[in-house]
Every structure is written in C-alpha cells, then in structure tokens.
Length: 293
Ligand SMILES: N[C@@H](CCC(=O)N[C@@H](CS)C(=O)NCC(=O)O)C(=O)O
Image 1 (cartoon, rainbow, N blue to C red):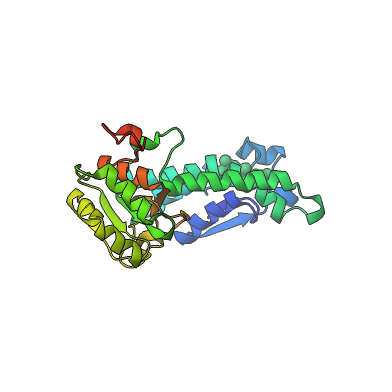
Image 2: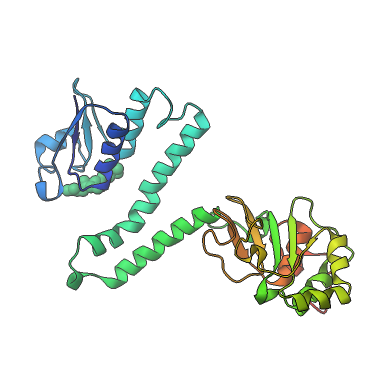
C-alpha cells in the first residue's frame, strides 16, 4: 500500500492526499513534521534528505519527495482517463506549469500571511509582514488574471474592445475629443469600438454636432445612452481573457464580464487604441491633432 509521510495540516501533504483521493488509491498516512516531529531524525532523513513533508513510499521501497513530483508521479502511473494528467502534451505541460507556479510564486508569497493570521495568536502577529505578504500574493494573482508578465510594454497589448462611455467619461467633451482623433481614420480591424454617450442629452448634443457620423464612419458602434460595458450589462460583456481599453472607472475582476481584463484609459487613449488595436497614446499616432498632444 502507498504510504504518505507527513502531517495532515501541511498544504504540501494535502496535495499528495488530494491525488490519492482523486485516483481512489489505497493508502495510509503517517503523521510526521510540525508538532509530530521525527522529520529531522536519521530514519526520516534517510528517506527525504530535506527533512520536509510529504514523502511518498511505495511497497517496493520506491521513495519520492517534492509534493508536485508526487502528484505527477501518481497521476502518470494511475490516471488512465487523462483527468489529472491530460494526454495532450501541451495541456499536460500547462497543468504542470500552474502547479509549479503555486510552489515557486504563490506559496512563498502567501505563507507569511497564512502563518500570521491562522497560526499566530492575535497579540503576537506582525501586521506589517502580513500586509506585505497579502500585497505580494494579490500582485501575483493580479498579473495572472490580467495575463501580464512583468516588463511587458503596455503598447504591445492587443485590445479586443475599446469602450468609450460611462457617466465618468462619456460626456460631450469626451466624445468631441475622441472624434477629433479618429476623424478621417479607420478602426483597427480586430478591435471592437463601442461608443456610448453618458446620457440621452449628451447623445442628442453629439448627434446635433455630427459626432455620431464620425464614429460610424470610423467603424465604431454608436449606441444609445446607458451603462453598457461599464459594468458588463447584457450583452456588452468581455469574454474570459478578452482585454478592454475602457474609459469607465472600475477595473476589478469580472467587472466587464467574467474573466475579462480591463485597462482604464482616458477618452484620448481610447481613441488612439481603437486606431492601432493595441494600447496606444496620442504619441503613437502619425499626425495627431497638435492641440491635443
Ligand atoms: N517543495 C517541498 C516543500 C515541502 C515543505 O516545505 N513542507 C513543509 C510543510 S508544508 C515542512 O515539511 N515543514 C516542516 C515541518 O512540517 O516540520 C514540497 O513541495 O514537497
């Protein structure tokens, strides 16, 4: 029978327990580490020279440590349906990637907050260390949610939808400024451009000035006044992992549709982005109206 050495309260041991559970494998777990000790004793160090948990032991004496390797080993050996270990090499590598990301990035970031808040009495907590840990964890998760890696130039980001609107930045002066930029140009072919006046009065004023025609000629959708994609009103939503440049003023997760990635921008940046299809400022345009630059 498979033996898992390690205390139940360890997140790394829990990964091995999750794998044996999902794969319905007969197993036994032996408490080691933490308050149970024994992991720095010679007998345990002979199995796992790191003195950490978990360690997996097979009946034939095969020993394995490192929680991710244990999960990969068990899945590789016992998962015949490709549920835990996808048969497609790329999918398998992606599953592996996220496991290793947890171990190398999220784990170290979140551990001080976990220890501080869960395993330390309130009077002994280090508030600054907990806050730093929370911030680091949030930053790691935010980069993943936004599909960004540090150092990526914002100008390289392909934008699926530009949203010019909302009560914040769908005022007549915002529409005028954006129209001035796009006038006589053509929209980037793969970028959708929604223009939604902030109120019915703004829409009527814009139409009286002929701005609707400028936007329509450019390739934008000219809409009735409303909230629209500011808060992902049906059907104006981003699909998961789609990216918007949005003149609204909230960019939290899911605000413009589940999994959608929002970059908050000014009306001028929205206009430049709709022209180029990547996040752009007026500096990126040839012949931008000089009064606005
Ligand atoms: N990279 C190792 C890390 C193992 C590890 O740090 N285990 C911790 C528990 S989560 C440990 O053994 N701590 C010492 C102890 O429990 O006494 C793995 O993923 O297995």
